[in-house]
Image 1: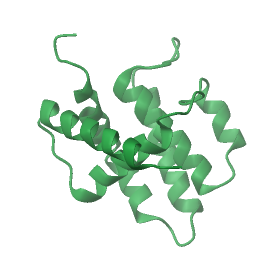
Image 2: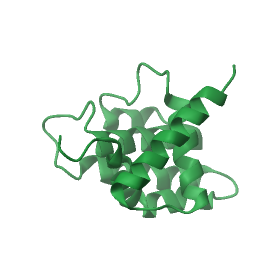
Image 3: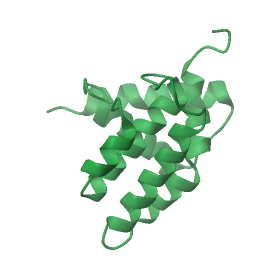
Length: 134
């Protein structure tokens, strides 16, 4: 599969998000967002509908990372948001998923730990994709 079109489109979206939000990420976080978006461009079942159930199914660092990524999309873009959860539900679940992903990885993955710490910032940057007048 040729990933170049997805990576380029994702890079353009992240650049637009940073510009609109006036929040600029370092290269490591910027690259993560670009590749996260490219990985999930064509997935139809992403993000999961019931996040808490995904935790019981997760077995690997990759599984937990996917949960974190899904929560980041929902938190930033209000897509597939459950109706009966607190406003900070997806942020809390996403942070937790990234921490689990980091701790399951051997050796412990420092980037995933950083994603947990910077979740709110990443979400605010991604919100920049929506025009501010909407």
